[in-house]
Length: 498
Image (cartoon, rainbow, N blue to C red; front, side):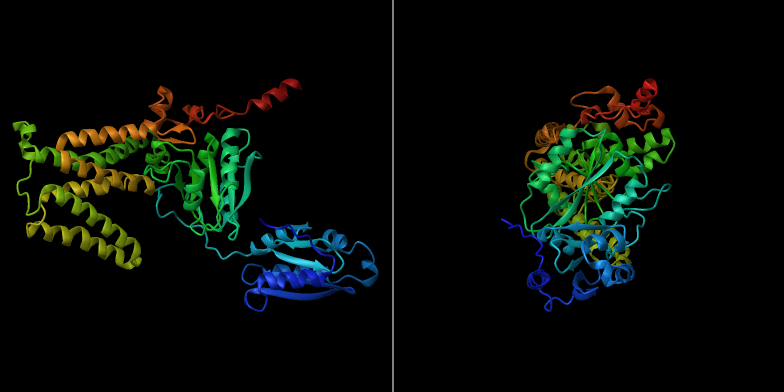
């Protein structure tokens, strides 16, 4: 349990305590400096590389320029209200809070004889500029994406939502890391129970640090996700995607040091939608969405279905006999598919880990040379390479990497079921997968909504890209406070009163 410590009026007590705790003289990046404010001693603590030195120099020029006669009483108040010209300044009387602010990059300024400390927020985080998303690319639309700095990410969302009801509440996570996690929501839209549940689970996280950022937070916040491959949250790198989900009544978690925003709760259909659909004509957008759904389904079912029919050729009618393997290869078909799946994963991981300049060459080697030679030497059949390639391409049709990984895992599970039990195994495994998806929930939201529970109007919206003027209702399953996206009725009520 952390013992609360107050700011001491004796500046030497504060200095000695912080020097011991922060390791001044041991850590090169902890900067300690003493000043004279009139005849009063003052001292500051800051972290090298996390403060804007030019800004702080201008502020301190004003703070130390007091005349002695001006500092007879209320020294700290005069400094705070008259000389600390920076906009982000606060007074704190608790040493624990001061330490948290310091370790977040803020500067501490002590004055002898005062029981409070001035906190100057002049942070200059190491950061990169927003650039185009590497996962959710679009041919038209904005090219900016989230970065690793939380204040930049919240600003990118606020630029798109100039709503005074937009809230970003900070929760500190990790007893040592004290990582900032912002809970983003629109106050008069989002279900208050959902907000309270998420904040409660964040506050109950008991761990020393979360260097893996959003993934660690998800495992604490989302219940039942540890052993369920189906992703119950969606990650996005695009501010416009985060903004539209906030307008629907979702909650966004912005974790400092992560360029991925967590959207929750989500369903199956959230993972098969892409921003590109809304940048195109309604008909074209609907066509793209249907192709994406078909590609995801094909990537899951095609290889195990073909394998089941190839292992039981008597099930095929004569008109479809051509689907069977002409040259089965040296290995059993089931082993070929499993080895091919593992090979695709190895190539995918290798392309992620090698430098960008070598990724294209590695992909060429894996996709063409290895596959081509494997069929020529008789190790694999041509059909195995073809169906594995179709499934691999289809799994990348979704912008959700977590969902694509889940589909690849389930495809391997279906292949194993076919190897051991043939077509009955496939049917049983598929039925089990469907049941698992029907039983899965994300914050009490059914994963297969609006199929179960059935909602026809919502089903049209997720299957087709409807015109934006027709999308006036928010998802009912989220239980939003404001159910439609028309102009707020509050303004009309006020006008009526007038």
